[in-house]
Image (cartoon, rainbow, N blue to C red; front, side, top):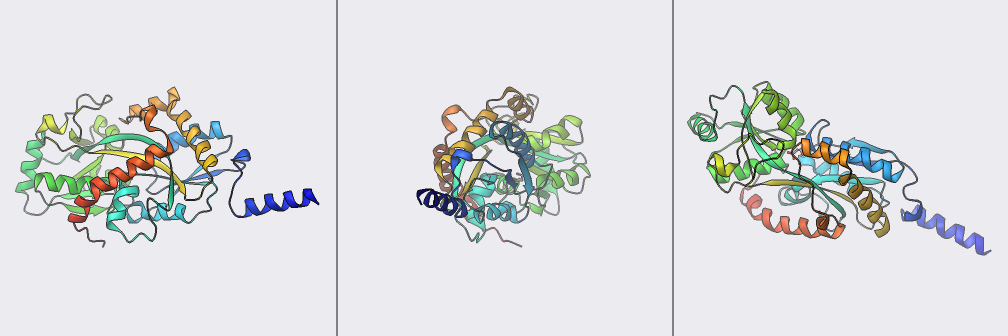
Length: 323
Ligand code: MLT
């Protein structure tokens, strides 16, 4: 009789999605990337996933669910069972900005459980090679002299590249014509092809093409240069003092995911961030790895709330129209 009760209880717990951390994970985990394959968030997810699966002993499969500035991919995770098997990777755009732009149908803070803060990188101002400018002041002069607004590639309204564009408009007074893509990977392809004028992109996405000479870089949006790209000036040095923006990323799971499952995922991610081979891959992309004190689930939760308070006023003031 007692055995029947225990078996029934286990069945109920498992059915209701309450994974027992003891055996978590017992099957593959899906990491939902809300942007196109080949872009900066996808690249980070693949480096992280490859190392985390070693710790967790189960495959981590990447699922790219794109659209609406990444909000569709996040929504996919919000609606998933709270068992740790569906994980959201996102950033300042998807887990902060989108809440000020879209009627999401979910709450970025209360419908998701923060797991861990991930590497960050400053944005970089890049243009097609066809632009007759070598310095930032020359680029700004060319943009101001243009009869029509310069075109700026983004990963959709609310994405990191869009928020950076809004901030750029605020600081320079130059109006941009946004060209939305499902990620900055396809946007970068069009920049290389000269189809669009600029992207205020994540350094990790553009740096390889800058090094290859297929696009031109003007500055990184930080007060210090990127270690892996010491030749690119900061916005302070290049003539746009104070234009600082760092795009940070993180992992989240659906709310009500058992605490010990969250901790297990956090531990696996922290191990990946401390792994020398994974660290080198991140740093070569110009990514900065968070400090140990910033790696608890609570730290990400607190940081996300602080960033919402910081960025929503500017984003709401921009009165972004969703096409
Ligand atoms: C991407 O992976 O495409 C980016 O994270 C998009 C963005 O937010 O700019």
